[in-house]
Image: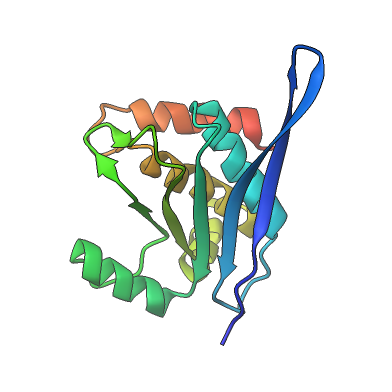
Length: 167
């Protein structure tokens, strides 16, 4: 049984010359032992995405699992009996994405096995593929849907990758 480990990302901002520290909690749960997860990097990236899309107050949870658990979730929630790379479960979802008053916006679940396969297929490092999935899953929590938005999510995702990921 794996233990729950938390990682908290914080950001500093300047307010009228005074240092004001805003704390945001990004919870990272690692429910697998195949791949090491850099919890601090994952939390910082999710926090940066939330900042860029105007949700400086939002918090979320990212859980890393294996294919068997992901297959079960995908079957139960999407009716697809196979694992997928990332699923997002928004709390308090509306037609506009998450409600502006909700602090904890939802959960991003990532299968490390599928992520590793895709990384190899696309010629990426495992870490880079995880970064792509964190950005993708966080945007889904914000209400973006690449299947219905005429490319808006894909454009934003490419922009965020350029701005937030080191070459």
